[in-house]
Length: 173
Image 1: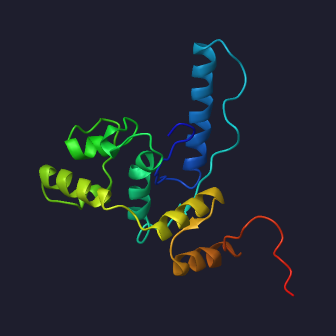
Image 2 (image 1 turned 60 degrees about the vertical axis):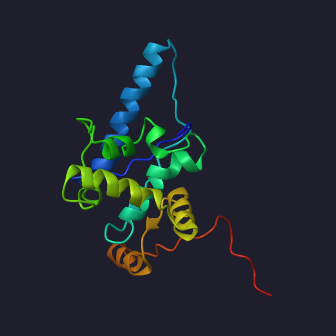
């Protein structure tokens, strides 16, 4: 994207995501500052992260990410976007750094079948209701998942995980 990136990551440790983002930020800022003879930070703020219900919403988030450059009118087709895993998956030219996810691997038994089925599946798109949920949850660093999943997480952490709009609730008459 022109001003942000989407990463769908399953950390292997509890602090894995935070540590990875800290390291990535440091290294990238050092690289840019060194390359362009500049100083200071590049980021407007810290990264945003959302917990995703693996069983119900991982596939929805995958489609969301793959089609985001198309919705943003950066490209006409998702395989035209060079910063996405989509092109690798549908052409079979898998980059060494790309870890093939179970969603892709479950779309077919052979590489050709997976390439065809994954393209078809992604291009089906995502219902607007689910797009809105993902956008709202990512802006609020909330949980992307079903009510059952959110309630389960709320019980584990011992507090409400309900997403609310900013500001005070409106007074009732």
